[in-house]
Length: 417
Image 1 (tube, one colour):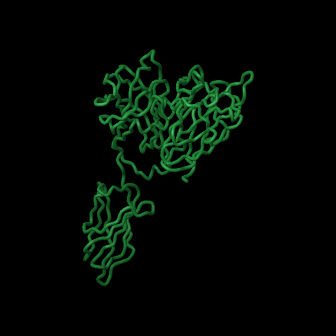
Image 2: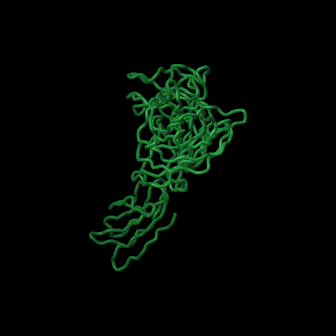
Image 3: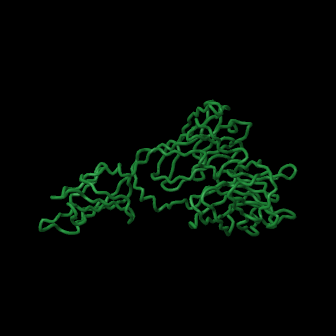
């Protein structure tokens, strides 16, 4: 905190510069200037004016102004049309780490099976909607969150189920940290009825960007495979103080949005050569390690692969890198995964020509061995529109691609357009 810096001295009956600045307990104050009728106050943040006013009091409640971070205040005493010299004062307004809410339906950009897992409107649910149809291992909700203070926190899920008990695992930054036990039978979220229960786990977050995955890990033969529908989550803040400007080093976006294959929409050729949506992920084990614990296999025919739903705040260029696996066998070809972008989902059951939306392909990726994941050399840049986007990683006959498995793509923000 710096002392007041009066830029000129008072003399000859002129108004003096303001002095005696202090900032304590949320109140900013300075001493009265003799002869002043009012004061022109201007607050700047990062070199830009964020608030200005003419006041008669010499104390200001900063919480009421809604300002935060490293601020500079300039003050000029005023009498009639005359002003005194400008005085400047630098100080920091800290923010309080309170509870943070995450709506399950707001995180569908990387989520489940689009033909089944989706948000469902219900005016009795929190914010009027919830997410259902989380039916297969690896499906769930994937959250990117910029945490201001590192620490251990209570993380609360609000859910409904009629199949007690059900369980979802919680992975943070690629590591399993906890398991939600959904033990209270609430019934399903039918129209006219909604009574979400809550379950709480503890998770540890780092300062900066974190990924939080809440996902199913099982099938209908065990309790892990029982079904629950998700309404919203609450990260319980501790009331710790922090400076919002200390988060600037982490950027407005994560270094990359990791879109897990198992949390996208698998596209698998079924009967009558129609593209369907059932292709359960492969769980890690026996020496294999996959991001978020799952790998999507069986990408073997034209149009097979995965679809992700991604919301972009602005029209921008993003860079895609791919983590994949592929094995060599008699008659095999090197993998050439292709990426397509659209602004509406392409129905899985239709036979679609993707040629009009191809953004690029990764050519002739080396064999890694089945279930042996590596990050492919090279990348594909794509343009995403502001709002909804659908990103496809596909095997296309037109690219002469061999078989491959998909672990994830990293989607890095490059620039706004």
